[in-house]
Length: 438
Ligand SMILES: NC(=O)C1=CN([C@@H]2O[C@H](COP(=O)(O)OP(=O)(O)OC[C@H]3O[C@@H](n4cnc5c(N)ncnc54)[C@H](OP(=O)(O)O)[C@@H]3O)[C@@H](O)[C@H]2O)C=CC1
Ligand SMILES: N[C@@H](CC=O)C(=O)O
Ligand code: NA
Image (cartoon, helix red, strand yellow):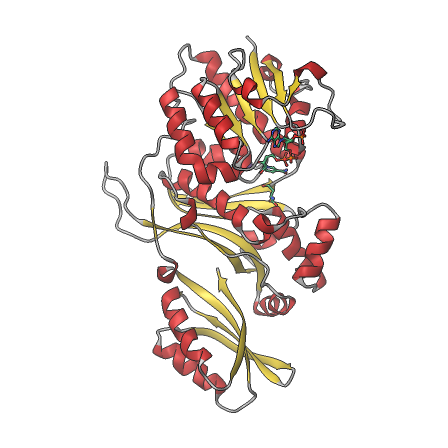
C-alpha cells in the first residue's frame, strides 16, 4: 500500500521532512509505504539541497490540496494565510493534515478541527509545540488517564537562548539579541519570539489538549523578555533563581469533579518571564532547548525535554504524525475519527482574569536614600494583603537605593493595588522591574 503525500513548503522543516521520507533505511518499515507525490513552494528557481524530481514541484498549492491522488497534506509553509485556507480546502477534499503551524492552529484551531471532524479526517500537530519533543501525542494518549493540574514549559528556543546567554555573560538583552540574529538563532523579525506570542500560541494548544476544551487565543496573557535586564538576572541569581520565559496553563483549585460531570474549573493561561528556583527541573533547561513540565493525577510530575526547533528535530515529529495517520489508514477500511488521534472538544475553557491569578512577585525599586523607605513599602504591602518573603537593599545605583522585594503568594490584583499606592510615595524614584516568581 502506498500513501501519497502532498508537501506544502520545502523550507527548513519541509526539506527536513523530505529528507527523512527519502531515506527510510533503519527507520520504521511503514516509511517505505510513504511517497512524496507533490511539493508546493513559492519559488521554483530557488536552489535546494534536496534531491527531488523537478516535475513534482509546483507553485500551485491549491492543485495539491484538491488532487484526488493525495492522501495526506503536510502543511509546512507557516503563517496564517494561505495556510489556513489551504488546510480547510484539503480537509474539504478529504485529505488528512499534518502541520507544524502553531500560529494557525492556535488562532483557527476550532474552525479547522470542526471541519476535520465533519469530514472524518485527522489533523496532526506534534511538531507545532516543542518541535521534535513528543508532547502532543503524550497529552492525547499516554497521559489520557490523568486529571491534568498544570502544564508549564519553556517552549520558545530563541528566548531561552537569549536568557541563557544573558545569564552566563551578564550581558544586556539588546546585545545578545543582535548577536543571536547574526548567528541565525533569532529571526530578522524576532517579535513573535521575544514578545511571547509564539509561546502563547503553543500554550494555547497544550492547554486545549491537557484540559479538554477549546481556548480563545486572545485570552492567553503574553509578556515577553524585552524588559528583563542584566541587573534582574544578577539579583535573581543572588536570591537563588534563574529567569526563564515560562508558558503556564494551570487549573485553578476547584471542587473535585463528580463522575460523569464536566469540570468547570477556570484556567490560568499566561506567558511571562519568571524567576524559577534553581532546584526546579525547568531551571536547568538552557540554550535553544525546550522542556514541558506536566503535573497530573495520578502520574505526579513528568517533564519532556529536547530540541524545540531545527530541521531534523521538527521533521522527526512531522514524519511521526504522517506515520500515525498512515497506520490508521492501513488498518481502518472506513476512516472514522480515532478517539485518541482526533480532537473533538466543543466547549471553550473558562479563563481566569490575571487579577485573580495567585503568584509570587519580584519587584525592584529605585528610591531616595532616606530613612524609613523600607518601612513605608512594608506598610503599604501589608495593608493590601501582600506578605513579603524577603526584602533586600544590596547597593546604591546612581545615588539611589536599590530595594528588591520578593513576595509570598498573592492575588495579582492585590499586588497591583499596593504598587499603585507605592508609586505615589515621594521616596520612590522608579520601579524598573516587576517579575513573577514560580
Ligand atoms: N524552523 C523551525 O525550526 C520550526 C518551524 N516550525 C513551523 O514549521 C512551519 C515551517 O517553518 P520553516 O520550515 O521554518 O519555514 P521556511 O520559511 O523555512 O519555509 C517555508 C516554506 O514554505 C514555502 N512557502 C511559504 N509561503 C508560501 C506560499 N504562500 N506559497 C507557496 N509556498 C510558500 C516556502 O517556499 P520557497 O522555498 O519557495 O520560499 C518555503 O519552502 C512554520 O509553521 C513554523 O512555525 C515549527 C517548529 C520549529
Ligand atoms: N521560533 C521558535 C521555533 C519554532 O517553534 C523558537 O524559537 O522556539
Ligand atoms: Na512536539
